[in-house]
Image 1 (cartoon, one colour):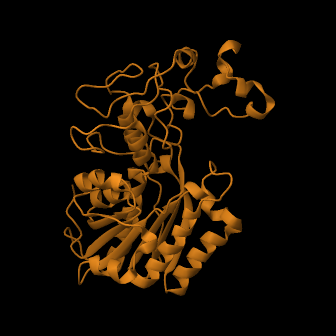
Image 2 (image 1 turned 30 degrees about the vertical axis):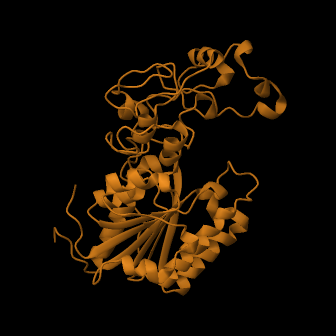
Length: 355
């Protein structure tokens, strides 16, 4: 791990299991705290990031309290990914009240006055409620004296083996700030590159050396279905008797992004919180008759192979660990954001240990 920037400290709001924090830590920043309302993330955050995890609802967090966490005489960086579920295409009703947490993010920025801010979310946030939610957020930052830059970044362009696009915003009180520049314009990381060397598993099996490398069970019909599936294909490739009733009717015939195998020589599809289920997306292993293991999902999110999500000896829940992995900011994208922040601070005379 690289030496920490001695005059910068980072706080991560909505930190979850620590994907965004890990990217900043790996690029040499001192991460001093992560804040999230989900207590189940505590072990993963503290064990891997080495910083305190504060279990608190951001909506009840006061700016002065947050400001006291920052180290004195340091430049302050506030990063976070407000819950993206209300802005996701999977939430068709848009009635999830947690979208208001983005307002609290803006409020805390105004009350805390960090030097640099990073916000990451799903692209749909740009147009959510006619664009007013994101527009109000950026207006809040500009009114508080921040220069703002944002765009939709494609994960594979930054070394992520996953066809995931994310909205990334950077804001600074120090001056104009630039978004990350692509590092992988054509040589994309693939599923095979990332998980091809892991031990083979059967459906319902687990690896003795890595308890997180475990796959969910498959019913008899789903085992037949995955055996009939081709890499990169869909359920339309199956014999008629294997096709689900819901896909035989007109209203379900368009839902082809489920029950599929991943293509080994392409980036994976977006890893969701339910990537461990064969029927929840195109999450079938490229060659083995099972869905992705928890460890494979974490690796495709860019986490290192030894990243801890549960304490040794604790029971492993697919639902709980899957949620932590799927909700995380992909680590390669987090590193790219951190590099942009580091370069921006260096332009304004912020010393580093290597300077």
